[in-house]
Picture 1 (cartoon, helix red, strand yellow):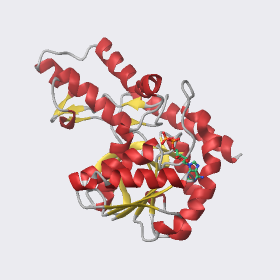
Picture 2: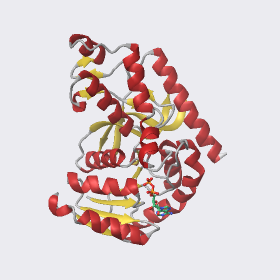
Picture 3: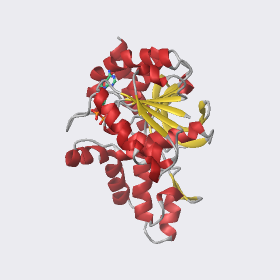
Picture 4: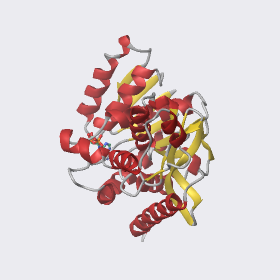
Amino acid sequence: MKVGIVGAGMVGSAAGYALALRGGASEIVFVDLNEKLAVAQAEDIAHAVPFAHPCKVTAGGYDALDGAGIVILSAGVAQKPGESRLSLLSRNAEVFGKVIESVLKAAPDTMLLVASNPVDIMTEVALRISGLDPARVIGSGTILDTARFRSLLGGHLGIAAQSVHAYVLGEHGDSEVLAWRDARAGSETVDSFAQQIGRPLTDDVKARIDEGVRRAAYKIIEGKGATWYGIGAGLARIVQAVRDDQRAVLSVSIVTPEVQGVTDVALSLPRVVGAGGVLHTLTPALEDSEAAALRASAETLKDTASQLTG
Ligand code: ADP
């Protein structure tokens, strides 16, 4: 599948690199306002291809996106140290208006994969501008927060993150919700697993993991200015689920008819992702406190989105 990447900065290039290494695309095309940057990223990644999987990596204008099955939207302005994702909103929404029009002119049948932050709001903006089926306008949402949650839980339990089945729901950002109640290690609840191996998940441990997930981006930004490898790999994972019709259960963001009484809001829930985009959305069993937090997260996002349209 041909994959377009609009925005060849850190996140876009990390996604392209991850796709090339994983064999996730037959062709990758970079588009950026900064043409020299797009060409440089394409050439650099093309030189990794002989060590990975066959893939044509190029840069071009929007017309080069012709025939793309999915276009990753990673264009925008970077998050500054200490800046909340929501404060990036107006700067990035403006960029999206122009970008999406040009993408759809070149590739009217493409799916859109939104990576620019604040990603849930940008997903809603992308849906509104594109007029596509909501199932085909997917935001990376909490795919990365979920990975961080699994990584920290796996670390505590001494097992591979791949054996942890746990999701972060709601906003990709401050109001996100770690769904502890249904979190599993293998087929056990994480609490039962932790008891059995003698490493109980005390309130302190849970609070440390919650903080670790919630503050991860801020911590990385303090050290290196931005984050890109984790999200790059997450984007490549979503592309592969679509390309191979994997029907993988991933926490991604789409505009959702109703969540905890809040209507038409883009946020993350576990969703079945395959060739048609999001095929199903799952409703996880939540503690009352988790359900209330998810509702609050949905309301926050809904408020922000309506400020933008209002
Ligand atoms: P991030 O860390 O989110 O990837 P960067 O600043 O590294 O942020 O990358 C964002 C990229 O988006 C930059 O390369 C920038 O040139 C690009 N960009 C900004 N506006 C547009 C636009 N209108 N069209 C295409 N690319 C854009």
